[in-house]
Length: 135
Image (cartoon, rainbow, N blue to C red; front, side):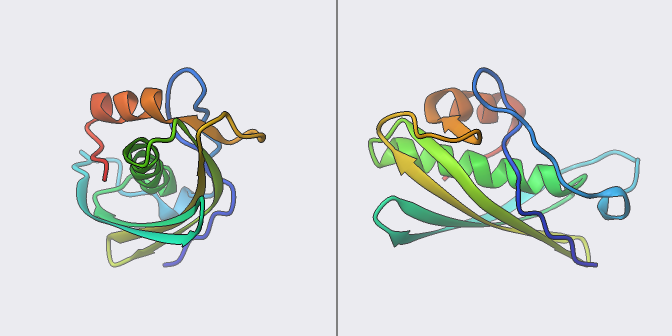
Protein backbone atom coordinates (compact mmCIF):
# COMPACT_ATOMS: atom_id res chain seq x y z
CA UNK A 1 0.00 0.00 0.00
CA UNK A 2 1.39 3.44 -0.87
CA UNK A 3 1.00 6.64 1.11
CA UNK A 4 2.30 10.01 0.06
CA UNK A 5 2.55 13.15 2.12
CA UNK A 6 3.66 16.53 0.89
CA UNK A 7 3.56 18.56 4.12
CA UNK A 8 5.17 16.97 7.15
CA UNK A 9 6.95 18.58 10.07
CA UNK A 10 8.70 17.11 13.12
CA UNK A 11 7.33 15.95 16.42
CA UNK A 12 9.22 18.03 18.88
CA UNK A 13 9.55 20.69 21.50
CA UNK A 14 10.16 24.43 21.25
CA UNK A 15 10.08 25.36 17.55
CA UNK A 16 9.11 21.98 16.11
CA UNK A 17 5.45 21.35 15.31
CA UNK A 18 3.84 18.22 13.96
CA UNK A 19 1.78 18.57 10.82
CA UNK A 20 0.70 15.03 9.98
CA UNK A 21 -0.77 13.54 6.87
CA UNK A 22 -3.19 10.79 6.00
CA UNK A 23 -3.01 7.54 7.63
CA UNK A 24 -6.05 5.61 8.81
CA UNK A 25 -5.33 2.67 6.51
CA UNK A 26 -1.57 3.20 6.74
CA UNK A 27 -1.32 2.72 10.49
CA UNK A 28 0.29 -0.33 11.98
CA UNK A 29 -1.78 -2.57 14.21
CA UNK A 30 -2.72 -1.17 17.60
CA UNK A 31 -0.40 -3.67 19.32
CA UNK A 32 3.04 -2.91 20.65
CA UNK A 33 5.12 -0.88 18.23
CA UNK A 34 8.82 -1.66 18.09
CA UNK A 35 10.38 0.70 15.56
CA UNK A 36 13.57 -0.49 13.90
CA UNK A 37 15.55 2.24 12.17
CA UNK A 38 17.40 0.57 9.32
CA UNK A 39 19.09 3.34 7.38
CA UNK A 40 19.65 6.95 6.43
CA UNK A 41 21.01 8.06 3.07
CA UNK A 42 22.00 11.70 2.67
CA UNK A 43 22.28 13.31 -0.77
CA UNK A 44 23.42 16.90 -1.23
CA UNK A 45 21.25 18.24 -4.05
CA UNK A 46 22.46 21.81 -4.41
CA UNK A 47 24.27 24.03 -1.92
CA UNK A 48 21.91 24.10 1.06
CA UNK A 49 19.29 21.68 -0.36
CA UNK A 50 19.61 18.14 1.01
CA UNK A 51 17.67 14.93 0.36
CA UNK A 52 17.28 12.39 3.18
CA UNK A 53 16.13 8.85 2.42
CA UNK A 54 15.25 6.84 5.48
CA UNK A 55 14.03 3.31 6.00
CA UNK A 56 12.43 1.65 9.00
CA UNK A 57 10.07 -1.08 10.13
CA UNK A 58 7.61 -0.95 13.00
CA UNK A 59 6.38 2.56 12.20
CA UNK A 60 2.91 3.42 13.48
CA UNK A 61 2.20 5.70 10.54
CA UNK A 62 3.71 8.32 8.20
CA UNK A 63 4.59 10.59 11.13
CA UNK A 64 7.16 8.14 12.54
CA UNK A 65 8.95 8.04 9.18
CA UNK A 66 8.82 11.83 8.84
CA UNK A 67 10.24 12.24 12.36
CA UNK A 68 13.13 9.91 11.49
CA UNK A 69 13.92 12.04 8.41
CA UNK A 70 13.67 15.26 10.42
CA UNK A 71 16.08 13.87 13.02
CA UNK A 72 18.53 13.05 10.24
CA UNK A 73 18.15 16.57 8.80
CA UNK A 74 18.73 18.23 12.17
CA UNK A 75 21.91 16.25 12.88
CA UNK A 76 23.18 16.85 9.34
CA UNK A 77 22.68 20.60 9.79
CA UNK A 78 24.74 20.51 12.99
CA UNK A 79 27.49 18.43 11.37
CA UNK A 80 27.74 21.02 8.57
CA UNK A 81 27.97 23.86 11.09
CA UNK A 82 24.42 25.13 10.62
CA UNK A 83 21.80 25.66 13.29
CA UNK A 84 18.57 25.35 11.33
CA UNK A 85 16.72 23.37 8.71
CA UNK A 86 13.51 24.04 6.80
CA UNK A 87 11.27 21.24 5.61
CA UNK A 88 10.51 21.29 1.88
CA UNK A 89 8.69 17.98 1.36
CA UNK A 90 8.43 14.39 2.52
CA UNK A 91 7.06 11.40 0.61
CA UNK A 92 6.36 8.21 2.55
CA UNK A 93 5.93 4.72 1.15
CA UNK A 94 4.98 1.53 3.02
CA UNK A 95 5.47 -1.78 1.25
CA UNK A 96 5.17 -5.01 3.17
CA UNK A 97 5.88 -3.34 6.51
CA UNK A 98 9.02 -1.59 5.31
CA UNK A 99 8.53 2.15 5.50
CA UNK A 100 10.62 4.50 3.37
CA UNK A 101 10.77 8.25 3.57
CA UNK A 102 12.15 10.60 0.93
CA UNK A 103 12.50 14.06 2.48
CA UNK A 104 14.06 17.31 1.31
CA UNK A 105 15.29 20.04 3.65
CA UNK A 106 17.25 23.24 3.30
CA UNK A 107 19.90 23.91 5.93
CA UNK A 108 21.00 27.35 7.07
CA UNK A 109 22.96 29.24 9.71
CA UNK A 110 20.11 31.67 10.42
CA UNK A 111 16.48 30.87 11.13
CA UNK A 112 14.90 30.50 7.67
CA UNK A 113 11.55 31.94 6.74
CA UNK A 114 8.61 29.58 6.72
CA UNK A 115 6.42 27.63 9.09
CA UNK A 116 8.22 24.28 8.98
CA UNK A 117 11.56 25.26 10.45
CA UNK A 118 13.68 23.15 12.76
CA UNK A 119 16.08 24.37 15.42
CA UNK A 120 18.68 21.67 14.84
CA UNK A 121 20.13 21.59 18.37
CA UNK A 122 16.74 21.35 20.06
CA UNK A 123 15.53 18.77 17.56
CA UNK A 124 18.57 16.51 17.97
CA UNK A 125 18.05 16.53 21.76
CA UNK A 126 14.36 15.70 21.25
CA UNK A 127 15.25 12.86 18.87
CA UNK A 128 17.65 11.37 21.43
CA UNK A 129 14.97 11.57 24.11
CA UNK A 130 12.57 9.70 21.80
CA UNK A 131 15.18 7.11 20.84
CA UNK A 132 15.24 8.14 17.18
CA UNK A 133 18.72 7.85 15.64
CA UNK A 134 20.32 10.63 13.60
CA UNK A 135 22.98 10.72 10.88
